[in-house]
Image 1: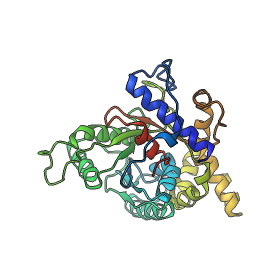
Image 2: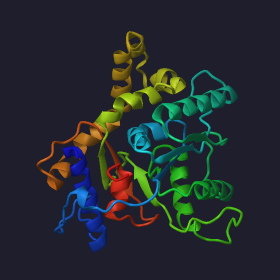
Image 3: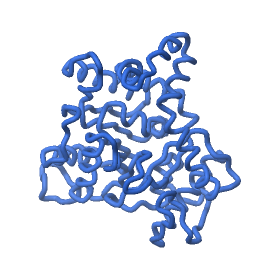
Image 4: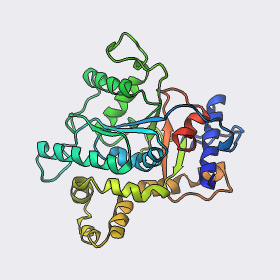
Length: 321
């Protein structure tokens, strides 16, 4: 096993021990003042069955940016991975009209999913910028989850700049308990073993900073991730440069695949690079003998899903097949 994989295993084991003793210590970093036991992921027994992971996010490309590299890793290992965009992306452009853009973004998302190697990339037909965590949407989300029966769900926190992100995070949290209520939506079989719900990384500080419960070194998967992100042409080469003011950089992107990937990594893997830096102290404290990765994808365990064990989180991080 590679040193970085051992390191991640230690993080997960430490987190599981924290859950067992009920003490997180510093809520902003995920560290704890309690004496946590650390052990190699080799000591965690392998779980049976094929892993199922579902990202439920607001827009086509949200899952790509937040857990695209981990999705590549898990898909390579034979896991079943699905991305679900609750909105159709129809407002994310400076020129295209909403109906045409929604159809385009659906095609882009589906092609990105193929590049990642995941099972499906679904885009639901809800308009951007008007999503509400209402009863109708709750039923829609619960049916989608019950149909797939995922072990893990990744979603947004409800403290976020975008109303659609907040609404999706609320919908997933609301679904957590209801997944196991048999007489509610009886046409969709209940999920007897509720999924672990995780929040994808963000930088919001209110009501508190994200807790780095799972940190995954994703640098080995960046090139394939770029192939998927490159499919979101309407976003990474049109809308987002226009919205953020770096259209001038696009001329160099056409020079080569290397230039294109450097552009994609600079702007859309920057979160992964920044997280490696901002959580570097947490990484070093947990396992001082392993170098801090250059790029990480970070997740926080939600209280609204099943409480994960060490081997649960090791499987999610791609350490156990």
